[in-house]
Structures are given as structure tokens and as C-alpha cells.
Image (cartoon, rainbow, N blue to C red; front, top):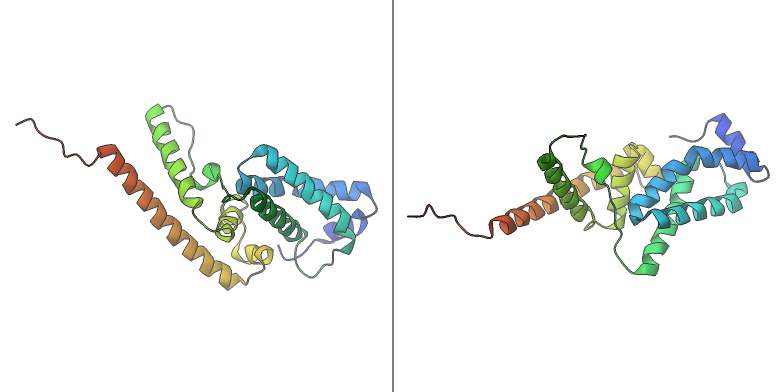
Length: 200
């Protein structure tokens, strides 16, 4: 993701005056922008509304887009990031990132007990993710949902590849510690701190 192909650059140049060109850009990028916003908001209705607003804003400003080696998708992500930040500020609450479909991979199973356990672990993971600052949540979304490289994430977040690598390791360590803490809390709640007697 080091800039645009000639085909995409041509679309970008024409998008300000040609609806069909902007429509093609929309079709290429709407899924990833919607996914990103959904995982930041946890709400399909708000994700749809904010995605529409991202592309409305993009349409108004696409004529001013300059190819400086930063991908068009990174430009869209930055618009989405700003709109989501405003959305959370308006609601004065911590961002929610439902990454259960991606961070915890579960295949179809015929065993309800296994599915229940997997669902419980997914919920614990989500709880741990929600404790992270917004920039770390953004990093996890781009890494695990969009499957982007550190260099690509750096372009979107405005940081060097080395800074992203460092933030990624710190984020995983924080997430691991929080997950273990929650898991221990679950075990304590299950046993109730009571040692079983053998009846003697």
C-alpha cells in the first residue's frame, strides 16, 4: 500500500467531477471503511451512518487530494478516525471494539459446550480490548481485521513503521495481562473461593 496504481489515480483525478469515477472508488473502499467504523462503534446503524458521512466528506474534498505516496485508503481511514472520535466524544463513553469474529477464531462445531466456552472467551477478550486506549484499538483493527502490515498501519496512523511495531508489542502485552487477569477473576468467581470437602 505505497500509493495508488495509475488506474486508481485516474479515478481520483476524475472523481471530483464524474459521479461514476467516485462511485468506483466508493465500491473499492466502502467495505473496509465500514468494517473499521463498525469495530470502533459496535453498532451497525451508527457504522452505516458514519460510513456515509466519510464518503460525503471525501466527495467534497477529493478534488484537493494530492498523491504524496500515501494511499487513498489511508486518507479515507483518517476521515473515518476523526468522525469516530467525534462520535465517541458526543456520547462521552469509551470506544467499543467487537473484534470477536476476528481476534478469536472459532469454526462451526457440533458441541454446544465447546461453543459456550468459546463464546465466553471471546467476551473476555472483548472486555480486555475495551480497556485499551483508542489508538491501540485502532492498531488492532487495522492489524487483525484489515490484515495490514506495520508499514501500512504507520501510513494510516501517521507514525513510523518502527513506532507501530513498538506500539503493537506493548498493546499485545497489555492485552495479554488484562486477559489473564479477567480469566483469573472468572475462575475465582466459578469456584467461589471454596475448597471442596471429601465429606469426612
